[in-house]
Image 1 (cartoon, rainbow, N blue to C red):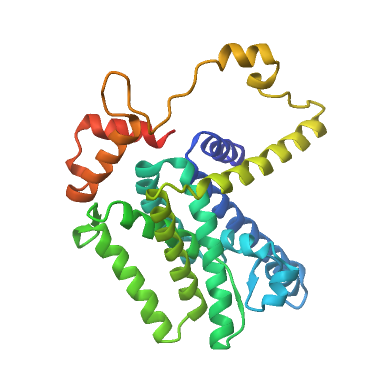
Image 2 (spheres, rainbow, N blue to C red):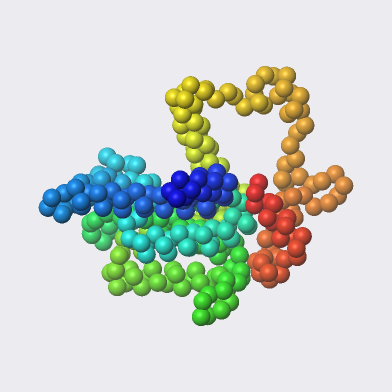
Length: 313
């Protein structure tokens, strides 16, 4: 059974989109940290969790900026870490619901950068609020990263209709407005203040991400460049350990092949086709404007198919 489960997870991770992969990573860490908690309790004669708490502190982000400077990885590891079941359940549900909308509208390649940047700005907001309001502690969870995606979905398609249990169809902009208001209430009531500031920081990043994208600046490009470099580095290490060094990409194997197969200049998304039709980017912008005005359901079957294919690029 466990072998079959593992095969299913590997298949979904390799073939799924970025939202699916982020969910798998978060759930995997959740399972591992709770199994470690179980074994720590069973292995401690006193029933304590001293070893578990030390390991958890190594991954959570502290409100002490000096400690963060000595453990800078916590700025990122904390956004993949959850302890409680309900905490990870709601974060992953929100990531799935709103992540699909963002991926369909602006492309899957923007999801991971938005998640990472949202989590990073959320953690910075947590540190700033701790310094300003004088509280101390540690934080963990993907809430700031997820809120970046949630807010981005509302900016991209504010009139998109979502169907809520016991309520019915509700426009996306109202759902997100309620979520932001709940964070403000949490700060006013001094309940999980640092967490709510992290939510708002992540939401701000989601808004800024879309704003910059519309102005022509794609914040995902430098992030993806770093992520791909790290991925390729570990792939090379893995290939060396297996005795199977990975060869260079075909396009760079020799100059002749590069010239032969790369002689045709790629079509820029902002160019206009020679027959006078709209370019890919112009058609995509027109569809996004239509969604903004009349909602996703107003799209024709052809427009939905075009949007689906565009999200895969």
